[in-house]
Length: 192
Image (cartoon, rainbow, N blue to C red; front, side):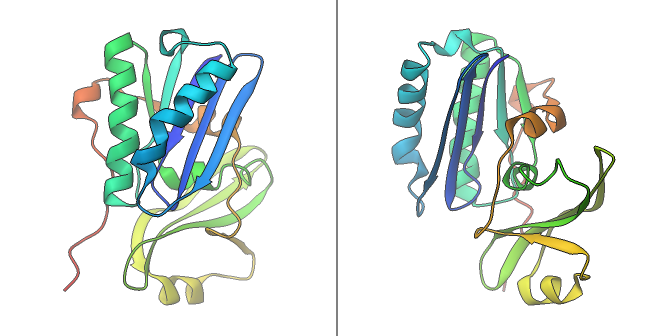
């Protein structure tokens, strides 16, 4: 399958493009500058794989929770590719993308992404016999409170140990029926 996966919800820009045989992958750390690099990296990947955007069969986008600006950057690019080239758009929680490399092994996983003011975005997933079960859906919580609530049998996934697996992302992404209605999952309430 020829696809692009894009997520800019965290301090990392994650890009993966496949021509069905080879995969071009980039994980670039940044600070509020994903918009400066995203199109150049996509162009490099498509060129290396000798592809055009119109060759893609699927566009997969992390929709958050995460950085407000970051979410808008990747979602805009994905919606643009989907709409202009009539390519199916798929959406997935950015937390699922950030922890996808772990979700091939049985266990419980707490996937987190940094928010602001001692808060994080979190999700708890259990994998058993290749079946994925959400224990706690995407949530905005105080970091210390969340970390202290975790049992010893849960593996913590954060910005120090993200792992990516495109097959897991593809399997867990959902087709978007109307791309114009798709909005980022900001998830954060206003803080006083």
